Image (cartoon, rainbow, N blue to C red):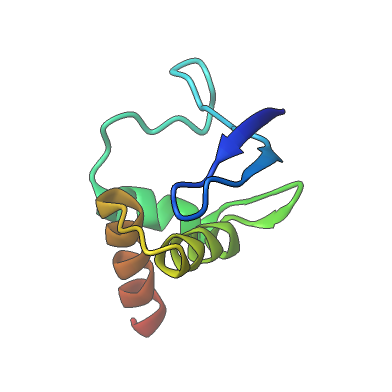
Length: 84
């Protein structure tokens, strides 16, 4: 666990960080966002479907007033996959 400081109000909360390194089977490296979205759409872990995690992350970032280009691009591709 690490302390996470929020820019909007300076509050600090305890959080967990997951970093996939190159030796992790789920590591996609510099894969295109389309490929990452397809992988996320089909993957699930101990905490549930990966798509749910990504969509909640994107929503939370938006709620905090932050735009993460990579996360929100993956979110857009996931939405397109769900329409197909």
